[in-house]
Image (spheres, rainbow, N blue to C red):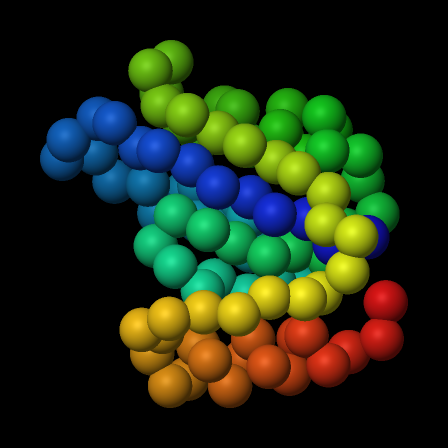
Amino acid sequence: MNRLISYDLRAEGRNYDCLHKQIALLGTHEWPLQSVWLVESPLPVVALRQKLQPFVDANDGLFVGELGAWDGTGLNLMAETARALQEALSRPM
């Protein structure tokens, strides 16, 4: 299933590499923007949030949602990101 993960990391100066690594481990993914990920995962959205929650601070925001299809468009994305997204969007569900 296709998931959208987005976050607001509100602690200045904190290193969130562990969060990024955990998201990447969830499944096939694309990282189109600094705080937005597209992930293929069979896990329910609540289970995904629970897996990521230990890697954010109490005041950070975290959203995990289900997408009905890989469909989207972007503006001012890096060329490599745009190509990767196009490949992801063309994969069958």
